[in-house]
Length: 214
Image (cartoon, rainbow, N blue to C red):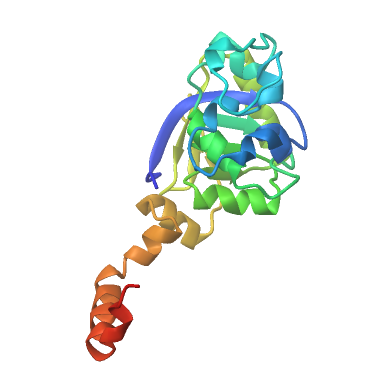
C-alpha cells in the first residue's frame, strides 16, 4: 500500500449528499476477480451518457460534459471534496478501490458511511472528516478559484489552504500509523515475517509429515 505522508493536490467538488457505493462503482463492474482496473468506471453512470459494461474501452464512451470530473478545470484532481454521508449503501470494497485507482489520495467530507470509512483506510485512502460549515467554505473557495489546491499533512493532522491557513483534523492513531507506513492488513502481518518463518521451520522440524504434498 502506498504511504501517505504529505500530499498536495487539485481539489474536485462532488456537490451531492448521500453518494452511495453503487454510484461510486456500479454493480455490473463487481464481476471482476481482480482488485485492479476500476478507476475508468468510477461514477460511471454520471461520467458517461452511454451505459457501461465490464471490459469496455473507455475511449469509445460518450462522456457527460456536465459531470464535474469531466470538466477541464478538474482534470488530474487527487483530493475529492464531498458532502454528508459519502459512501453510503452496500459495503463494497470496490468503492475505495475505484476512487484510489482513478487517482484520488484523500477525501474531505462532513460524514461518511462507517464501512466505507473503514475500507478507505485499508486501501490507502485518507478520509478526512471536517465540520459541515468548514466543508461548505471549501466548496465555495473551490468554485471561486480555478486550480484550487490543498495540502494535507497527515503527520501534523492539518489541511493547509492556499493562503496558508491550517485546518486541524482528527484521525485514529493506529490508522494514522498504518497510512504513514503504507501498511495494509498484509503489510501489518509481514512485520513479523522472521517470527513466522521461524515458527514454520520449527513446526516442520518436529512434524515433517506436514510438508508432504499429494
